[in-house]
Amino acid sequence: MTSLLTLHDYAAEASRRLSPPVWDFIEGGQGDERSLRANREAFERATVVPRVLTGTAEPETGTRILGADWAVPFAVAPTAFHAMVHPDGERATARGAAALPVPYVVSTMASVPFADIAAVAGGPLWLQLYAFADRGVTRHVIARAEAAGMSALMLTVDAPRLARRLRDLRRDFRLPPGIRAVNLPDADLVSPGEHSRRAFAPALDWGELAWLRSVTELPLLLKGVAAAEDAALAVAHGVDGIVVSNHGGRQFSAAPATLDLLPAVVDRVAGAVPVLLDGGIRGGSDVLVALDRGADAVLVGRPVLHGLAVGGAGGVRGVLDLLAEELREAMLMAGRPRVRPAPSRVPLAGVSPR
Image 1 (cartoon, helix red, strand yellow):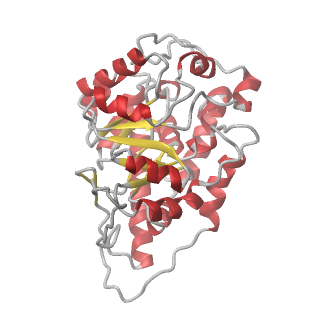
Image 2 (spheres, one colour):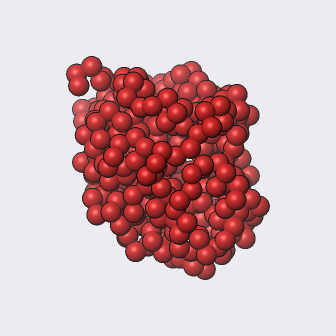
């Protein structure tokens, strides 16, 4: 559609196509949604100082994360139950992401088997993992991800349970008939919030990382890190990457915007591991802002679902192609010939870079 010129256009079209309960499930945040709003407000006030006479004609958008080459410095963020948005669910998302290709972080709560997603993926495929009170369930999910050939785990650490999301409570949100978390041994949950209270491990500590290392050799990233002190502890405990995230504003309404948290985390990690950011990305200039503040890459969540709602795999590809085009233009106008300058990575004392 020629009218879909921005990611906001995709959002507006998606809002017309999705039922109000599904739209609110996707768009809502915790409590009064301050954190949700803060993510966007941080980008809206952010600027990048352009450089001139840099000889930049065709910016290089490629980067390398955890030993894999990425065509662009962004990936599809983990979001749940894509079959609510399009009948092909995560298969369509993976097909759309394969065109560039763009890495895809698949949610534990995917509505399509991991193997089916992997069959059509075109770039790195990672698993977003919740820690379950029953470690047998966690092992089950990891084993399915490994069997599907996923190349990393991204443990969510900011969700001891799913928070009270007022939009969902007001609608008494339930998953539509036929939508299931098919990769869980007990797939027939109806209310995501109630399921999290029953099934998630509510009191995670740093020992969980050692246990995960004992059951898998996949690289391990932590998603939901906000404090620079926690980032340093994560590196000291041997993680392979950090995602600065406030769960898209869905867990704690008083949490700061992730963009505001990013520089302190980057400074404290000092290049020992990749630092990614999610929350509030709505255009190529937002990606450049995050890179300018030290992120190695970003994750894009809700806009991908908007594209999926608008046009299935083609809509996802449209969103990601638009984001890549906007990023190239932003880099050109800012005089940035490549995603990051050649880094001088100085690791934390006693910690080897990964």
